Each structure stands twice: as structure tokens, then as C-alpha cells.
Image 1: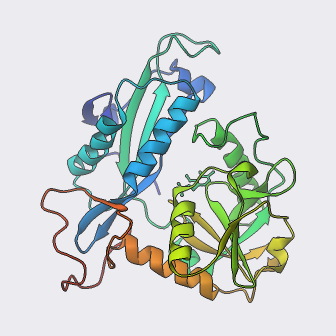
Image 2: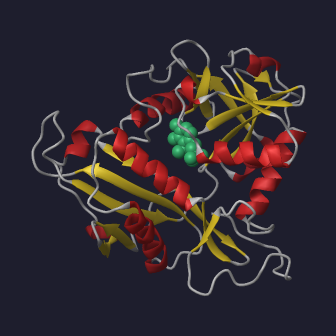
Length: 326
Ligand SMILES: Cc1ncc(COP(=O)(O)O)c(C=O)c1O
């Protein structure tokens, strides 16, 4: 979905018009991918607008900066407040949130240290990433011919702009060949993750997901899914998983801020389970949507309400249905 080009962007401490949110072409990040960023969502719940796990996203952002020896001019609390300020300035009820810390304009060269470490926050309205139908009926995916980065090359615990060159190759290959997504293996041939989402597989009632050592981004939705699944009484195992498990599993699904929880219907044209959203995927998806839609108590303290006066009332106090998602 194209940008509307309106609203405000937070840049280094000031809210500027969207059209004026510019950096110089000689900025380090443009040439060397020296940015770290986050993708979070704010949901419109019946109790008000709430960001999902904002503090956890901001923690990961500052962890990413630390891995890349960046010292942001603003601290984590200030940038977190800037996110809330930007949503309020744009009067958004639901939106996607993109804070970015990047090496700016000074001089060009592989050594990034002379360049300033700048920060910005963008927010925009963004619906279901793979389409609304995908959330219910699932998506067709392929195993990517591209592997994820090998250990000790590009660190995957950091959400850096540079890593998304690899993600784009996976995504372009999938789209070009008529699939919605690609699942990448790590360089040892074990299952890793999608271009922008983590992977879960269900077999014989057990839920499996690749571990952090399989070159994955430590997804916040992945963590939420593991928490929800255990709350629901399921067992979750983080294990190195062989590719062929996807061909014989009962259910498989993606988890990520953008895709939320999206069932996988087929892999390499082999049907997953009976080709429909499976019961465990459905149960976890429902529990997840109930939380982000503010329809159940926020028992893990995952919601940050954006506007003064919100949350409007306690869950279960007759707030009614009809929450719009991001
Ligand atoms: C490569 C990759 N893996 C996994 C994820 C899922 O992470 P999260 O659930 O924190 O959005 C993302 C999304 O940011 C991603 O880009």
C-alpha cells in the first residue's frame, strides 16, 4: 500500500512534516545499510489505541544498536516516548510503527564511527501484510534457494537494514515464482525463518520452532506465541528442524508483527495437513487476536495505551465487539 505522504515524522527530537522528513544522499546508511530498526503495531481496541509490546520492541532496537556499536543521541525511554508522540501527532487509532536508528551524514567510508547516530520514528496505517484471506486460509510458500546468513557473518539477533538485502532476495524469488513467501534454511540446511517472520510447525500435538542458533531474528511475536501456547497448555520446543518436517507436519504457521499469525497451506506445493488452518494454529491465533484486540485481560502487560484517558474501561465491563486491527 502506497504512503499517503501526509502527517508527521519524528526526526532527532522534532516532529516534521512527512514531506520534509529527508536525509542527504551521502548519509552512511544509504550506502552501507548502517541502520537498525523496529516494526511494531498499534491496535485500535475497544478500550483505546494500544501498542503491542512496545517496550520489548524498543529493547530489541537498542540491543541491535549495541551490537553495531552505535551510541544513539537519545535514550530508549526518550525514543519510546517519541513513538507515542508521533502516533498522537498523526491522530492514528491503529498504525504500524517504524523507529530507526541510523548512521547519518558526515563522510563516506566503511568506517562508520565519524558519522552521527541519528534517529527517526515513522507511523502509518497498514493492514494485513499477506492479505486478510491469508489469516484464515493460509499461504503457499516455497523453500528459498537463498540461505540465511551464516553464524558470525551478519548477526541475526540485530534487526539491521543490511539483513533485509537477504530478506528481499527470498521474497522476490517467492513472488516471481508465484508463492506468497519463502522459508529460508540456515547454512547448515536446517529450517530458519521466512523473509520477515518466524516459523512454527506442529506435529502430533507438539509445537516446534527453530532456535536462536538457526540464524533467526528473535521475534517478539514468536515469543508471544510461545507464551500463549504454554498458557493454553501446549508444549513448545525450540529445536534445529529438518526441512522435510514441513512436508509431514500437521500444521505450520508464520508469526511476526506484520503477518501476525498466518497459517501455511502448502510448502513446495506439498499440502500442509489437510490444507486448512489447523486447530492448534486457530487456538493460538484466536488467543493472540483477543489480546491485541483488547478483548481479554492483558495478563502479560503487553499493551501500552497511547492516548491520555485510555484505557477507557476494564475488559469485561461491556466494552463490546468490533475492534479494528491495524
Ligand atoms: C527476518 C524476520 N524474522 C522474524 C520477524 C518477526 O519478528 P517480530 O515478531 O518481532 O515482528 C521479522 C519481523 O520483524 C523479521 O523481519
